Length: 436
Ligand SMILES: Nc1ncnc2c1ncn2[C@@H]1O[C@H](COP(=O)(O)OP(=O)(O)O)[C@@H](O)[C@H]1O
Ligand SMILES: [Mg+2]
Image (cartoon, rainbow, N blue to C red; front, side, top):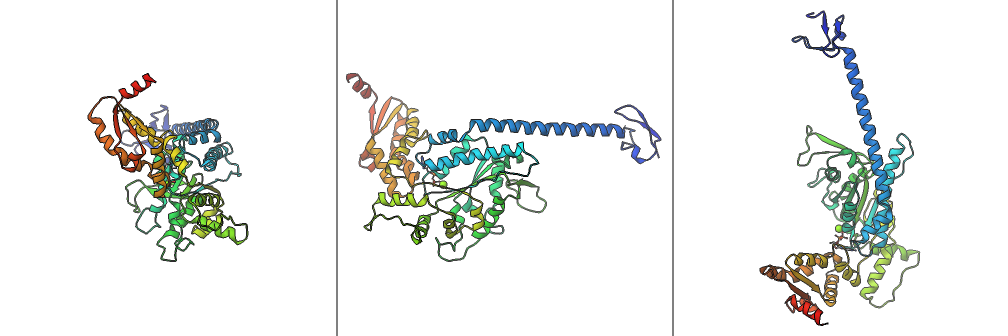
């Protein structure tokens, strides 16, 4: 043995070497050493420090949660959604409560660690026709809430082994939305859009054809819904055995799934007609209003068994206890969507043109005609913006040529394409006001 004793370079004591355990850190070349008792002290210090950190983190998180809870009560969340979403009162209420309960559940977990009673998650399924505000509602909710939130298109998912994205992508998207913080990811919200597209093809809505992977995708999603550790690689990394993986437990992630579920109202109607009282609207050819009214009445009565008939596996339905249904939007609703929300298309164009010194005015009849055209296109509020955009194209091309203050009036004929929007000098308005 080269040394019989050494100086501990930390405490300075001379340590006699009696066996190899007396020299836990000793560089034989330089004689640099740290004794066992110093290592113990350092280790103890680090442990204590880490424990303290974890404790403060938890306390901070708990405090933050407390604050979020008091700030985001359901009626406050709903009021925020009201600023952007017209009608859909029940859906806005359901989502506000779901988000609030998600916070509460987290807080309960933190306050009762070690306890074995847990509050169950209430995952939500949103059903409603195209362009009625499903995606919009969720994206506004996510802006308000200080929880990571990610939208994944379920129709892009495929069963492992098929070409396309694996179900883990939904969790990976959330992980990035959470700033790559695993703890935050594990308390986030995942929205699976276009969920009806993964319905089993042999469901009642479809003919019996080959079903490449839809049921497999549902099985994959089921595992996530039930709570499991999902493993995925960083973005852009191929899955291979050596690629480092990230592990996220989905137990506390809130899942919201949404889709149009085209034709589900027919399944509801069929079920209702079997035993319970059917909803009758006379035998003549129903008007548009009657069809809408009937649809809205039926859609709110969707039950788990209808979803099963549609082609969603029962195990998944069991994990989605909250059914949230949205109504189809009529002409009046579309008219309101054009002007009322904080980000209404009309307000947006007004702001855009104001930047070019132009005051934009839509006549009421013009807006009503936009709503009518949108109804014809059968895509809910989705086509509103496109219809106006078409009319505005030439205006937005011409306007920036000059910097003079002007005003533009859009009337019904402009929407019908029979007339070009009139560009008038702003003075006329002032004069008209003065003479009045
Ligand atoms: N009820 C509503 N209130 C306000 N805007 C709406 C409403 N429904 C739809 N929109 C608008 O229409 C567009 C399409 O809505 P979206 O939420 O994507 O429809 P979907 O229900 O098919 O997901 C969005 O720009 C959205 O802002
Ligand atoms: Mg959508």
